[in-house]
Amino acid sequence: MTQTATPDLGWGGIARLGLVQAALGAIVVLTTSTLNRVMVVELALPALLPGVLVALHYLVQVARPRMGHGSDVGGRRTPWILGGMAVLGTGGALAALATVWMAEQPAQGIALAVVAFALVGLGVSASGTSLLVLLAKRVAPARRAPAATIVWMMMIVGFAMTAGVAGKLLDPYSPERLLAVSTGVSVLAVALAALALYRLEGPATSVASSAEAAATAPPAFRAALSQVWNEPAARQFTLFVFISMLAYSAQDLILEPFAGTVFGYTPGASTQLSGVQHGGVLLGMVIVALAGSGAISRLLGRGGARLGSLKVWSVGGCLASALALMGLVMAGLTGPGWPLATTVFLLGAANGAFSIAAIGSMMQLAGEGRERREGVRMGLWGAAQAVAFGLGGLVGTAASDLARWLIASPGSAYAAVFFFEALLFLVSAWLASRIGTTQATPIQQKTARTLEARIQTRGEQWSPPLQQGGTP
Image 1 (cartoon, one colour):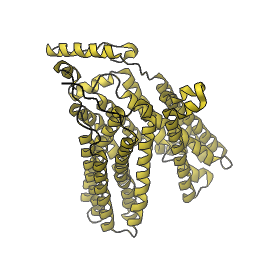
Image 2 (tube, helix red, strand yellow):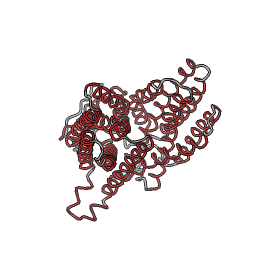
Image 3 (cartoon, helix red, strand yellow):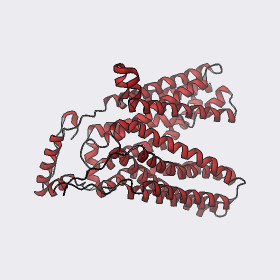
Image 4 (tube, one colour):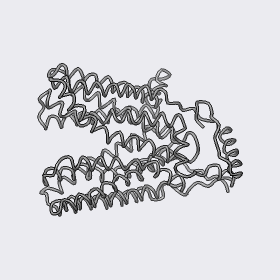
């Protein structure tokens, strides 16, 4: 058989994958935000309940590496994306049904909600992981940062549109409206994803010979995961994703309380402050996208050549995030009079820059090391991100409560927490600077694959030689 080359995705194909991400986000935002509010406000249930359910949907995402391995074995990502969207849509509809059921039979409703949120997490794991792998394999290197920006911005648009439209349809609230709107969003999101993916990926790639097929065929999941974890670049990047996303998410739940407690912001004003931060995030994403496409480098000439490096933006974004958090430390110590909105905007811009650079680096590193392990690598990093997000809110709020108990001044207590988060970003910058991208040459890779096939036919255990930089 001959190798079948698949063309790189153009901007239209990237936008179609962005629609899938927007559809995914539409279901998630209703499940993790709207339903939580209904449980606490309309049903007067403890706030701990939705908190545990959201944490559960993050926890089950440790299954991401297994989902990625499944798509590696099949060679195609579309079935996993669509299957994941179907599971996600089912989970979203069941979560709404469970919320309605809680009003009459709380125990049964909560039990169903546990199943529903677990399905949401599994659906996100299957669809989100395979979508990123498809982007990594089919987007040219020069387009990876802009592609990541487009996909994530479309997801944010999906969040905003769904929240706005669903909010209007839910008013005045009734259990029947909640169930109809949530189910309708799930059905429309799955249909949109199916249309966007139609004939986008193409058939699975065939290989040149039976020996090469034996060399590149993925092993059992545990062996594949062990192989990926033993790759220095993959392991270092996993730690970077976990620490940086822990720092990123830890300030999410305490920023608005900080503004209200120390600066006297009203709920409306603190919500606007959150909007200022998101505006900064979008700006940071756009800047990295332009730099990654070469637009800034061409504008600045030879002096701006390094600005297209995703590694530079990952390190620089983490350092800038740490610096902005030190600004919040000063805000806590100084109190009213400090330019809080400007500081928060700069924090958002730094967060946006490093997060898009990290996603672009994911797409770059996913194809390095052993072949046909892209899904396992992307799943491993996705799992690290999910666990970090699940812990981030808990760590941030718990740290702020502890600091306020130990420190009499609320401003100083919040400053201590922001200082801790700044240290996490400094560690993240150090980890990002150490991530190597050296890989074996094509000749070395071909020789290794041939040797692996010969050893496997003899029933011996294959142990790959270490190449320069430690990547097998």
